Image (tube, rainbow, N blue to C red; front, side):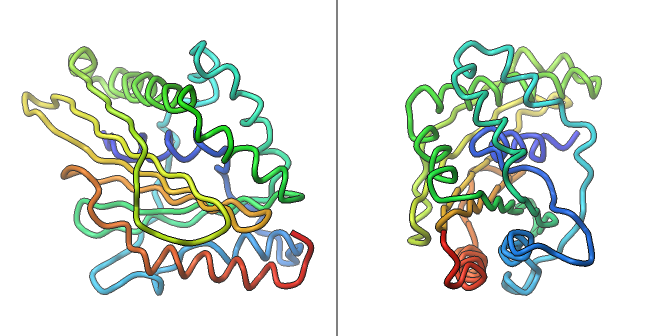
Length: 237
């Protein structure tokens, strides 16, 4: 089981509700073009990186996970805003044990895009992320036939400081997961950086199978944010 992928998806979708890909229609709307502009490409990364498309079909339905957690119920309305945004997502970019991807959501206006960021900065929301993370990974362990590892699962979530100055608003959170798989204690690192550019949310998810996140590829983040700002141009945002 790839625990890291479950965690990265949990952080990204839970925190800012920007999951999913945009339409593949040949004629793109202005919002679709903005969303596509922010999607990471292999050219945004330094030497040594590769890309892959990975199915998330085995990931538990996170909205169902959140709905069972009392601490998360005040934030369920944010999940509903997914349907109002035009979205695009990147492939996974891999370098050793590090996995990076991003998702872009274009909202109708700045106020709508700002609401998830305000919510994400609350103490209650951090608690929601931690409990959802624990529940989601535990369900994945059980589903993959590794239920014996579930009781020993340990998750720690706290605010992160990626040291990247970009966009109009920003929120970052990191997590570490400890679990025993095959009799071996393993630690995984996760980080999510969400950046708002006008009415656009640009969320970067990091997962490392070897430990805490130490490289957030700032050049790739800046490249994505710059393309979004250019795509917005003089439009009202």
